[in-house]
Image 1 (cartoon, chains in turn orange, cyan):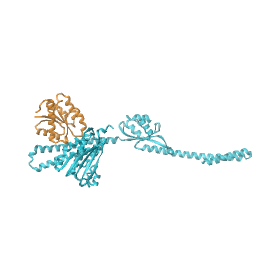
Image 2 (cartoon, one colour; image 1 turned 90 degrees about the vertical axis):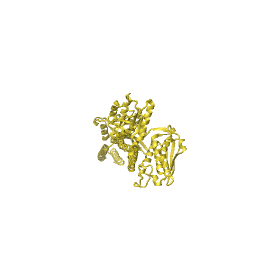
Image 3 (cartoon, chains in turn brown, green; image 1 turned 30 degrees about the horizontal axis):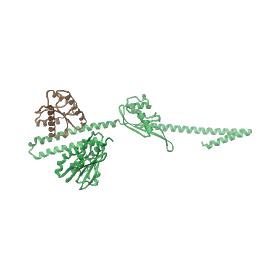
Image 4 (tube, chains in turn blue, cyan; image 1 turned 90 degrees about the horizontal axis):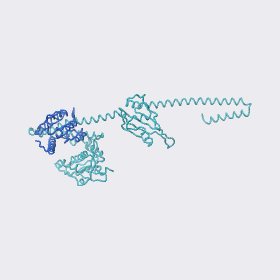
Length: 132
Length: 421
């Protein structure tokens, strides 16, 4: 079962994505901000991390930086969720090594699932490891 | 006293002296004559003194009027001579600078060197000299002075020495405090990004959830009416997201805040993507959507690829909306500097009155505000396209349109090869 860490502060959006992944048969762990996300990573190793940019306490850009600094987590593929007004941040996150940036408001569920699957497939190919 | 009066008086005095010289017996008469002349002069001098006093008083009054007028000005006013050195500095400029720098105005010296040193990254003295030398006024839009932001305007002052001959007597410098205006702009920016986040989040939830109900719970919805209502909820959320995106694009473009990342790219690839997206919709209507071979031979253009994609999508999308039979063709040509791309349809066309309404904000080509086809979008598409194309260094327009025959829209973009010239 594919494991995903979802980091999103808005409760309605958080619920929506976690429901989507559960319906697709993923094991989902949710966090409500960057700090909470890093905490969850201490005991849960996901196959992919999906994180929002604008969050309280620690935002997505900072959290991404921390993920990439830690050898235990730096190779986990990441997808960042943006809301277009923070498009300016795009260059920064790509420089930090994020795999993909998704615009939340343009999302249809099948698009999100196919993006997650393609990021996972590419990461699998790159590392030679197989992910069930 | 007139010159001829003076002359007459001197005449009389010399005649009287001559009389004394020639006839010592007439000396009494001559002397009393002289005394008379002297008294005359005394009167003249006294009158002149009064006139001088009056004129001086008038001058003082008008100068102090001038000073009080200058001091009452909201703007900072400084006048300097040709050196340049400060001659007049009104209360406003003293208050502006002293409060901006948090200093006591009485402790500040008001000469040009001090004034110059107050502004960082900006040489006031140099600018005044440039203005005088070129006889042109100069404006600087945002100069920092401590906690304040100022707009500075320098104008040379000339005096007409004789007909057609002008002489510089100095310069006038006006200072306007635009700190509040700039703060307002900054808060407009923040409002824009906060509003965009706030609006898009609930819209994302509506769109995503209604989509998921259809996809994962479709089987549970036996009632076709319920299924249809969920479809409507989903479609409305998509439309609303597009409207929000349009509003925010217009805001960003009008404020000059839209991020443009120009690159060299092949336009035919962008068009091919859009043709693929819209092909099904056209086929369903029985309309052929095609791009001409001239498009594939077009040299590279230099512009923001995503934004131009938005423009092409708008033009082809519009053609699709207003064409019910026939063809929509995308054609291109180029000259030394520009690429010209046309979208030609065999659709409904527009009357001359409606053509005048094109490219304006919110105005769909239609007669009355009540007679709007609200299913056809916000009416902002062409306005946004115009702003984007112009920002990219090109232009956009209607080539022709005829009711019942069709329309052709064209836009131009700079060629990649032209940008070095």
